[in-house]
Image (cartoon, rainbow, N blue to C red; front, side):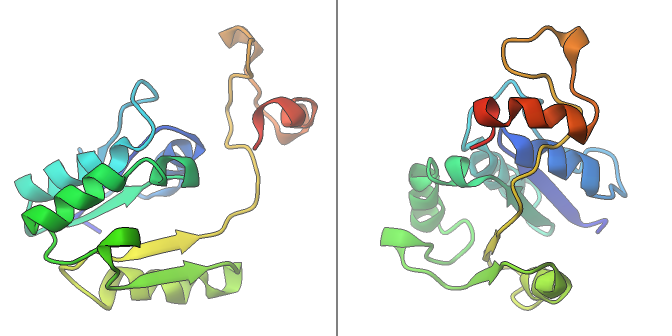
Length: 160
């Protein structure tokens, strides 16, 4: 984990990464702190990998952000940054899908260790759940949602 750097885009996945990844070194996560653009994680990861070639770089993004990445995927392929072709029109080297919690540990090990030095697309299906604390839409900061029970009243407005 000491040789791993992370980038995130903007969204719930950003908060989940910040709350659930155990950091072992300072400056392991590159993030906009909610002031960035959806889809920016891969751009951050490209720059991070170019500056830190020997480290593992993981871009964490949600499905909406991933759909905004095609320009970066083309750049990665054309510039040989990761020496591989990627999903969609770019071909694919390896993709891993996990939709069950009991499979997550094994799939995560496959993602992290089976293909060192090559990018791997890891799609993890998660439950629709809020990541707290959360400032609800159209609400001031002092009305922050701190418990899951508070979130039920906002579900129709802010959950996809």
